[in-house]
Length: 392
Image (cartoon, rainbow, N blue to C red; front, side):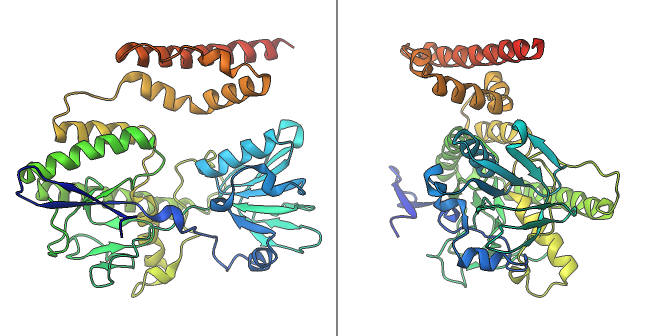
C-alpha cells in the first residue's frame, strides 16, 4: 500500500490525513489486441515485446530490423535510440503516410494488418504495403491505468456511462479515471472519496510531467486546506463540456474516416483512433457506442497542443501561486524534437560536457536563465547546421 499512497499530516488537524494516489499505469503495459492477426505468435516466440521492458538497444543486439509500433513519445524515443544504434527501423503509426527517411533506414508505415511468418519476419500493412526480414517488434502501445488497492465496489473497472449526468461512482476504464475535477479530485458522493482529502496525481499525458505535477501538488494542498475553493458545480460543467467536445470530434472523425482526401495526422498527432480499443471494458454498450465511449476515455487525460500550459495556469490560479507558465517553456516544448536531435549530436561528437559546463551555477532566476540560453544556443546550432546542409 505504501507504494501507492503518500500521507501528509495536516498541521491544523482538520483532516488528520490526506491521500495522494499517483497513476499506477506505468507498470501494466497495454499490448495491441489479440485480434491483430499473427501478433500472439510473435509474442509467444519473444519476437515482440512491450516497450516497458526496453532499457537500451542492446536488448535487440542480434536484430538488424525492428518494427516500432506506436507514434507516441515512447515510440518516437525508441525510433531515435534504435537509429542511433545503427538499426533499421519500420515505424508503424496509425494514419501515417508512407515515407522512407534516413536513406531508407527509417520506413514510416501505417497500421499493421498482419504479423506473418516468424521465419521470414513478414508484415502486411492496412494500406497494402508489406515488409520482410523484420527481426523484432517493439510495442510502444501505452499503459493501463491500474489501482489494484481499490475494491471493485469503490472503483469500478469499466467505461463509465455516457454523460450527462455525471455518474455517482468513480470509474477506471483503464484509459482514464472518471469523474475527476481538474483531472485530480473525485466528484462523487461516495464516502471513500471526499474531494478535499483524496487526489489522483499525474494522470495527464503528452505533457512535460514534472512542472505539471508541481502545479497539481500546489493545487491539491490548497484545496485540502481550503475545501471551499473547489467549486463542484463548475467542475461538473467543465467535465460535461470536455466530454461533449471530445464526442463531437470523434463522431466527426468517424464520418470522414472513409474519405480518401482526409489529411493524415503527423507522428504522435492528435487523431483519436477507434481501432485499438478494448471493448471488454465497455459492457452494456453496442460495439459502435462502446468504441465512441472508449475513444473519449483514451483521449480524456491527453493534452494536445498547448492545452497543458492552460491547464497549469488554471491550477496556479486555483492555488493562488500568482504566476503563469513562462513563454520560454512553451517555446522550448514546441522545439523539443530539435533540441533532442541536437543534444544527441553533441553527445555523439563528445562535446556535450563542454556545452553544459558551468550552466545553472547561478542562483535562482539566474540559473534558470543560463539553462534557457543553453537551449537557445542549441536551436541556433540547429539552424546553422541545416543551413549548411541545404547549401550542399
